[in-house]
Length: 114
Image 1 (cartoon, rainbow, N blue to C red):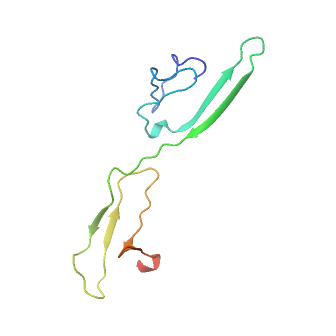
Image 2: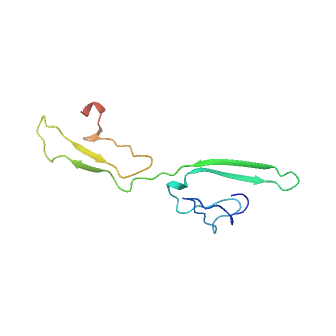
Image 3: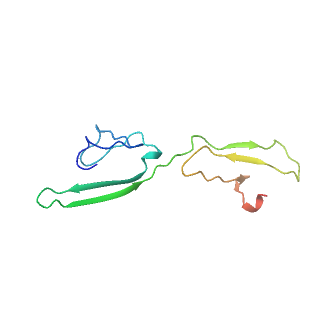
């Protein structure tokens, strides 16, 4: 957008709220994954110089999981020597969530997994 907020090219994920935007700032609403990218502002001087200056900044959009992780598999009781098979699944997120296993409130070491 150069100069005027009343004329801009609509893009996926870019929903400008004109009622909250002005010549100094742009207010985006309903940000989604398509909203991320590099935003640039350009200013131009009036005649006779017509000098221009610009600045840009990347905006990243993150999506948190909509719910906590889900555990599946496993039994209520095991005997010594039994093999335990349990799966932990996270809801969708961006970037992908990092899952960690704890055994009796201590972070499990990779050597404890087969």
